[in-house]
Length: 214
Length: 285
Image (cartoon, rainbow over all chains, first blue to last red; front, side, top):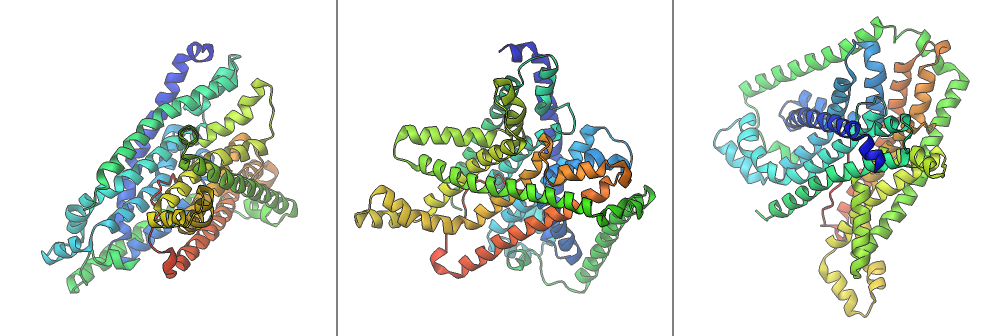
């Protein structure tokens, strides 16, 4: 208990950092992922190929390596950016590949008749996607999308390996003040359980409510 | 793949074809520009100079990278085997008729799915010493991989068993098999077969997660990459080394994924393994 209450400000501040990183990366990755999914089902071969190559590369690279590049290599190649932004870029680029696959899977769950009817009405590709297919895909996409975002929340800790602002680095701060590393890490683990469990419950509820047969 | 998506647009007419060509050209220009900027910056910062690529030729460096690769694969192999065993045990526990066993297993699964793998590894490597237990980085990495992926695999196994049609277990009970027999001879073989693609894609995740060992200084590929990359006598070739290591990881993961696709295709041809879409929620990121 001492470890927690003696460092409460530090603890909450770091979880604030984690949540900030999570929220910003989640939004960016959702936007990028949906755009990539649209590219992968588009009538333009070059776009489909770009989307496929991107997803294949990013899904098969460890996140640690992606963040390794952004933490250590980016400044060498381009210009200085604060680590928070670098972590956002790395996490978003990585997560977007998974979001893309989930959304693409969701698109294929919408019955073909829907898109066919839309085509018969004379809608174009963009209209079919944004007005007919995507709104209906939301239902089947939500549960797996929540798992991707839960994974993102946990993945923010990888950033802690390269910098200090985030919950995963709490143990170092405690250690410097002579506290027990073990206890500090257990508190961090508990913090994540507290953050993740509501999301899991929400996900299960969505799954149950929305898995109703069409 | 083209079947479900081709429905989204008509066969293009002359105007749509012109528009699609234009959009394709724009995409190509944008992609070429992005790649071009990266190559230009790499050239401008000397990342393409012969000096920072020289290390590729040195035997010691090759051996160091090979060493890292072996360590990565070693952690992957032991982590995978242990995670599969733990996953099977936890799934059996969760499916058990004994309430207490089911809820304990459920609790363990939820706990280890919720705690980030990095925090688990930190716990074992940096945390345990303050309780007087010291473990090697290897043990910490493998333990973390086992607990986290075991919990995820337990959900996969469970989903697989639950997806086997009810008539199968009812028929087995009717034949006089006991609970363990029904599970061993009837449910598990069918479940494993239908979940094999999901199991292998989780193993891909496990392979990628071995890279987290870098954060606790386990000498795997990425760790070697940083070591070599900060070596001044080689010209600090951090980015070249990272590129090579990325290529190695991507190749390994693609090989595993190709195996999954192959198995999936094979089982799809086989009507016995038909049906049962993997219903599990996968933490595949």
